[in-house]
Image 1 (cartoon, helix red, strand yellow):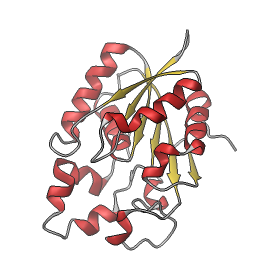
Image 2: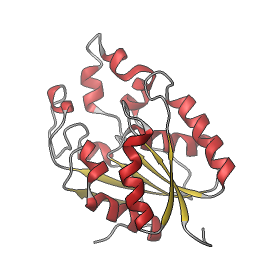
Image 3: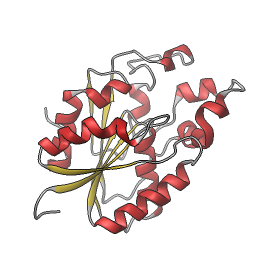
Image 4: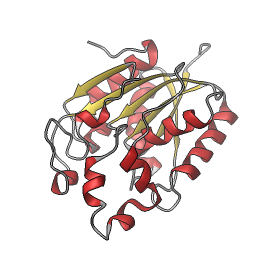
Length: 207
């Protein structure tokens, strides 16, 4: 991927909208990238509808990197698993439970869980830890334990208030880094932006 600013498609998480990624996008633009935001209905639409829409956007615009927060990262990985021929450079997941979400599993015992997670419940429970081997995937996890997930899940190790750091590990990751941020705080973290830009450029996080 060369010849001007590199295209980066950003995906938001559950219960969020495209606007929530705008600040992160502005910072990536300042880092020399050409960001665009992919919005999708995370509750009513479900991951497959999001995957279809993302793939359509990728095919229209040419090669791109992907950055997905939480559920957005899972949607990005599922899209690559279904269409490995789509020209994607590198992927950064921000606090995505690639091994499945313990908080989602705990909340799933409550009748209200289907209302909360909607059609995204299954992918949050199981995660998405497989993608084409030619695509380098990096994970930025948080360890500031502030979030509603702690009300439902019992975390045994570091977590960001919603997702445990252990839930963000997967054997196929090219790199993994932990920053001082909560789950939603990853979207406002200067560390997360710097690490994301470093990985998109070189396939490794800054040390």
